[in-house]
Length: 186
Length: 186
DNA sequence: GCCAAACCATACACTACTGTATGGAATCGC
DNA sequence: GCGATTCCATACAGTAGTGTATGGTTTGGC
Image 1 (tube, rainbow over the protein chains, first blue to last red):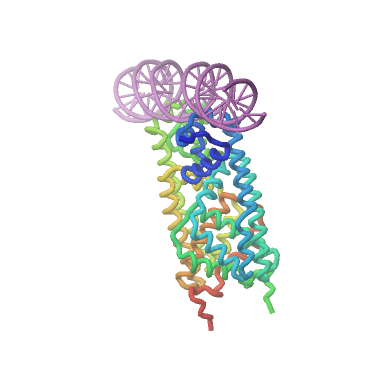
Image 2 (cartoon, rainbow over the protein chains, first blue to last red):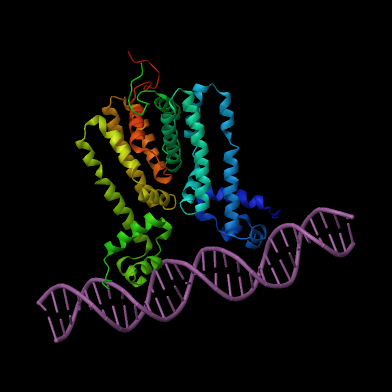
């Protein structure tokens, strides 16, 4: 069998492990058994577990940053939020969940996650401002939507994604009381 | 020193460990060192780690179920959601975060968490229906708010809680497009 | 005050890993 | 086709933890 591995093979397997078992599964010897090689291979490709973990984190960050949000831009502006929500709700975010759980145990992961959050919140904020929301409301709603995303990743429920996305998108873009000091719209 | 412990002492310490280090810190020998006793004490009070974990889970579930939501009922109905959100946003939910992370590694914890979710979502749904939302919209928004709560617990950000709570409560109680099939309100 | 029960310390055998050292096999450049 | 490099297996020593067995202290009941 062609069991000559590249470090990328290890990293790819690392992501599989994250999805299936969480970061607790990222043990050199278990992974070696799963890949039918010995730990010798692992320690040739990576100095130690820390180095491997770092590679996973960087890989994840990079994948997110060059991410799929791009293709949303082709949709009409007022459909983007709803589409985004629906898209997320129909896909269990297992890697996201694993990374989030991991972040609580590794400061470097927490850093990566914080950066990704900033990115996502910024994007959502722009989207909401595009719907005419004032900056402050757009920011807090963007933050909340991102929290909702994280929560969904960790505690998925069977839902009617399309209906839910339509309603939530409408709620988040409503301008009722969207100003801090309740001065009513004309 | 008065180092004669009850099993409740161990459990209390277990929650402290969860908040400070997550479930990864729930090791018999580390806890024994922290409490200045030997593991002999631990294994006298608990059959094994699993039994200890179970006690923690039950303790958490029980605490949540008889929970503090009660005192919200004294507030005027239309202030309850906003107050609840503001209250959560001003308190880092460290135990909640630890339990949620733990749930990904232990099915019993996941079960407990799922039950708590059901409870909370039910409560939020009633709240929202009290604001005149149709059942379906109330449910999906309740689910989303609970996800947001979980996300906040895992990825807290410094926010202006009062302003954010006011705006979010307004957004979640808006009736714009709250029906699945977009039949406009009169 | 003393016996039983409750509680704890210590020592032991065990598991699941980590990282290193060394040598051997596969493969590429030429 | 063979030398250098790349890649991997194996064996070793170490760490952090588990659970058990046994005996030693406290403490409350009477």
